[in-house]
Image (cartoon, rainbow, N blue to C red; front, side, top):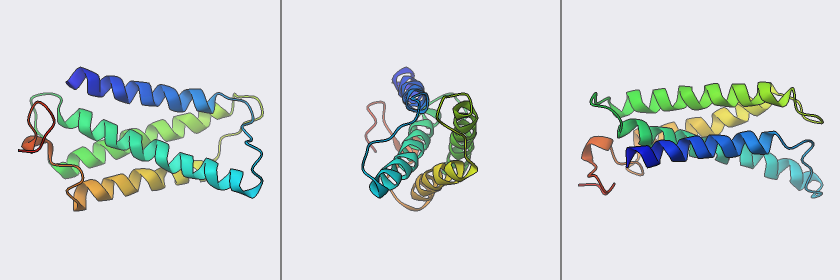
Length: 134
């Protein structure tokens, strides 16, 4: 199960990289194009943070608190967001942007807040092998 969770993290990160490698994305939606792309930033990194949290929580023998898992997941996703923007400097018709990293951070913070305040993400210690809360 843990292998599959980490595989999901890697595959999602590869999808983000692939989408960032497309030169000059324009969907032809006018002003809505901007909102769709920025919403995608929030979603991509919110989902990445959630995947990292779940994979980390089920890995290893050391059990960390929900807060520590959320912090590690958020920092890892933020580092990937920053590296993704650096990668875009080398893609034709794309550019890296600190604003995009801030938008990515919004998605990361939303998931970290949900982890800490809601039961959307059950604490990993309370999970069985099949992923269902006890």
